[in-house]
Image (tube, rainbow, N blue to C red; front, side, top):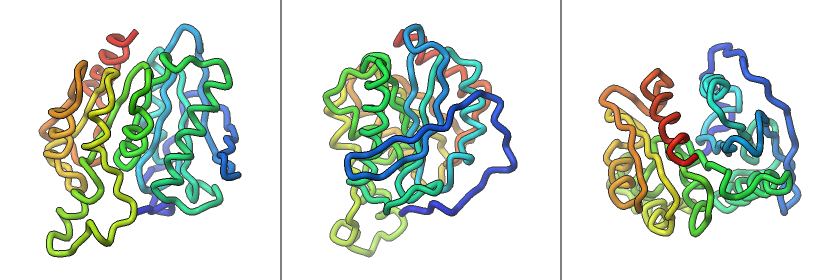
Length: 238
């Protein structure tokens, strides 16, 4: 489920200023984070939870687009990723995500000014931590309904519900979320089937927004249309 050494970036160079920060968890693991502060009081702050593969460098092409948006952002590497100690687990990733949010709260960022952004596996953490919270908004990119459902699409004849330890049950938890939600997914996703993102949108509470495309695979293209959808969502919650 976790592939910290699988990298697919192509010498992308950061074009947005970031500060490398260290975030401590309650179980004494130090996480690497990249922090970009434009204006904490004037703009929302995105907390970015990445997927199950690769280092922070794999997300440079996305972060570079944040440069032209009116946002601050914090992206963290999970335990066991990007040189961090520890072993990734569902419980551990929840702790990592919670620690990142608390780090921002300690800097004076208000809960209502935080936007949680989950990418693929990161949607499991984003959904879990957004339950019954007053964050500014939630963005889910290529979300799954649950890790059990996702595993069944690849191994339909194996009792994955009994074997899989980390379940990330998004479809149950999204019902406990009442903040604005944007769900993005491509119809030709070969890792997380598109019907899962569509299902998550259907069961999500209002206010909810979608950005669905016919051409995007699991790694969605950060093109003009996607950026427009992100900007529109951010403006709506401002």
